[in-house]
Image (spheres, rainbow, N blue to C red):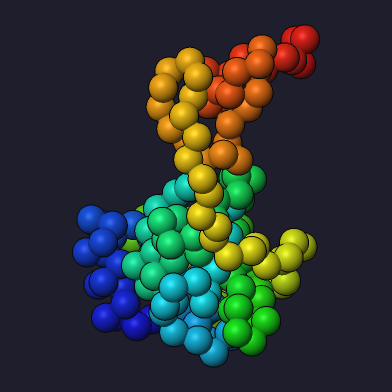
Length: 174
């Protein structure tokens, strides 16, 4: 474990916890296996499958953020992170293995940060392609509430252009 990176992530996240350790360790493994550093612009992309503490570790260590478009949230609920390095085309997916249940909180955190990464994560390849770079969309004003949203998020309803908040989906109970 790189103590400097850990301290940087703790400062960003606000406290030490096993969840943060997962993201920090995943980021370290990604840097090692992809042979890269932090992400300038969108050179490294992370697709996180959870919205837990570990995502803060990825943001702090690899500089992947939703605002830059290189941190994408794919809600499967899994402790899984897919990393893509745009220049080389390299990619990997890390999935947290089931950890020993007899570990207390500090023991779990220490194991995640110091055990060989093969004992912490299943290492494989993502089953999906590298997401495209972030696009800039035209803003469109909602005909109901008057608020603007990107054109790809708008819907046509009863002849009006409406935002997702004002849109009434037709589901027939599904």
